[in-house]
Image 1 (cartoon, protein in one colour):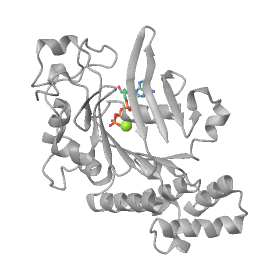
Image 2 (cartoon, rainbow, N blue to C red):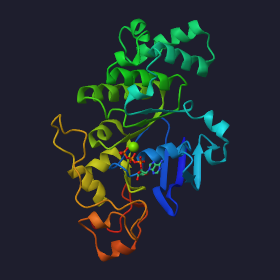
Image 3 (cartoon, rainbow, N blue to C red):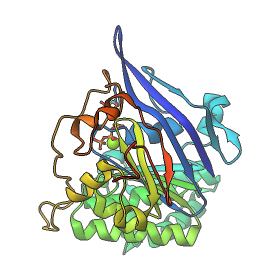
Image 4 (cartoon, protein in one colour):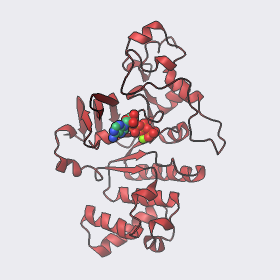
Length: 320
Ligand SMILES: Nc1ncnc2c1ncn2[C@@H]1O[C@H](COP(=O)(O)OP(=O)(O)OP(=O)(O)O)[C@@H](O)[C@H]1O
Ligand SMILES: [Mg+2]
């Protein structure tokens, strides 16, 4: 459905400084699959997903060798044509669902309006559809809930409302950027279960962004590990967890905290400093923090290569 080749997104941060937020990313998303994008804060997960829809603001520049969505070249589309895809064929949900809702209108108002916008229904039919959607996302007592204001919803309930909103347009792809990061562990699990049910029922694909390896493990068919603007390893979920090949993936897996409720979800910090995306090192970007680094790693800038069923960007992938 989605083919991305050599995606690069830069931001002009000062007069003479360019920040390379995404620096040569390839992504494929198949129909009905959940692709996970995982990596530490600042590695470019959000910017990569927003770049697919060219939503990077006036300081951002997106380029790619290919950026194709269901046969359409997204790089060649006008802003207006892109608006026909954003929030429609490709919907998004984010962290902090409360902040995405307008506090002065009821959830019903906002949902009904969105349904009318997407499906051209009259108010009564849109209301019936809103009820259906609330039921589909397992909001109990939907009649009453439609009349409530955002502050009357818990975080988990608000995320269900946002998911209902995202479903109005019957999207083929849902980009979920840390959708459970602000929620309790039990609520997180319910939202993940809901997303997987919706995926199965609607045949929708999901790009699941998270820094929580636990979330990624439960949800994803394939996983892309990002480090400093690049994908350093890509594999199916089972292979990635059982046989991680990139030293960064291995370090990430080792750093998963024990599942005590207070810690879960946060990666323990890996040793060493992440280089600045404004001043990237020559050679492998992870070399400075890598326990396997050799002199060769400081010169080679590795690209993804196939090793077994994984793709790994590391000159030592085979030995390790
Ligand atoms: N509008 C912007 N202008 C300048 N720099 C930006 C902008 N948006 C993002 N960046 C930078 O791009 C890099 C990637 O940011 P991004 O938000 O994609 O990280 P992330 O992986 O989503 O992190 P997190 O897990 O914290 O959400 C960071 O260095 C960030 O500071
Ligand atoms: Mg982010």
